[in-house]
Length: 124
Image (cartoon, rainbow, N blue to C red; front, side):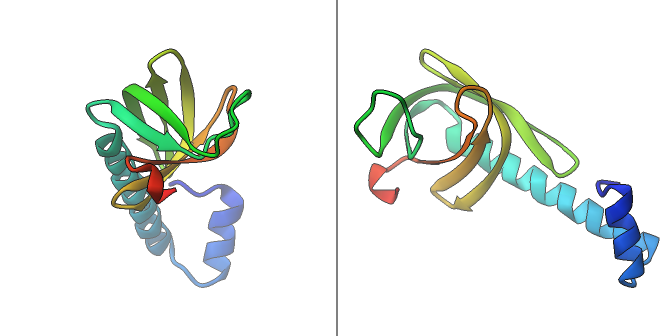
């Protein structure tokens, strides 16, 4: 079950049965898995991506990144992993697909922000 005890109690109070809560929990986990697969496919094979990441010493609103790899996994409703660029990497603490050609990741570590990534800089 991917809901904490308070959430489960609130859902039961709202009229959902335990079976309904299990079904919703399963649907949430499946949605996270789909997002993880979409994110991996987006970054698959490396190459250049563009982002709206705020970077020190950059005057540009759009950043260019050379991707080496991404490793994404799920745990319940959570999407986690690691994104490696050519000279540095960052933990992924969440993510979702915004469209066929745009993803958003919550990056930890030194970035600690939500960042949108695209293959075409005009899409930002």
